[in-house]
Image 1 (tube, helix red, strand yellow):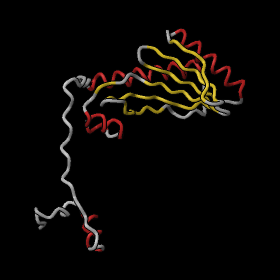
Image 2 (cartoon, one colour; image 1 turned 180 degrees about the horizontal axis):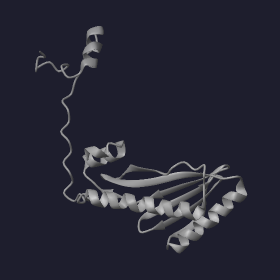
Image 3 (tube, rainbow, N blue to C red; image 1 turned 90 degrees about the vertical axis):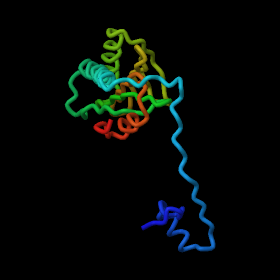
Image 4 (cartoon, helix red, strand yellow; image 1 turned 180 degrees about the vertical axis):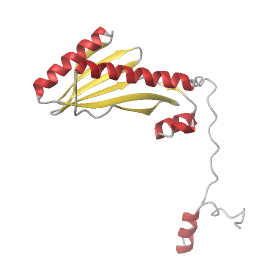
Length: 179
């Protein structure tokens, strides 16, 4: 049984260091109390709101994939949750469309641009270094299209949603069943 007064009782690694190096003082500070939620913290959204935003992001990506035309070698789209500032999370759906050269990339780009305009997205062309980008936004959501030599990368980012810290951890780590 461990001695409750022993500061190394809960730190086995530090105990080993102390035993191997008795000439070194090991100082163990008590754990910090968790910070209280700020009084003006936003009200966390419901699970239904999280599911609705994820579905909306996936629907936008599906619409863009349909506009891009058939892509037999394209991997299945992937949707993940990413952390955002102040206990918020954001759903992000992404995929990679293989293309056969720059001409095919231009065709895909025109189709994606036309679909975004038709759906009311506000977009513009940009560059990240030498990589051409199409950036679009609508209702706090964004679309990023990047052209590489052999593929077009599509990323749809949803709205930042306020959630409890535990829910944010579960979503971002992929353990959504724990929320």
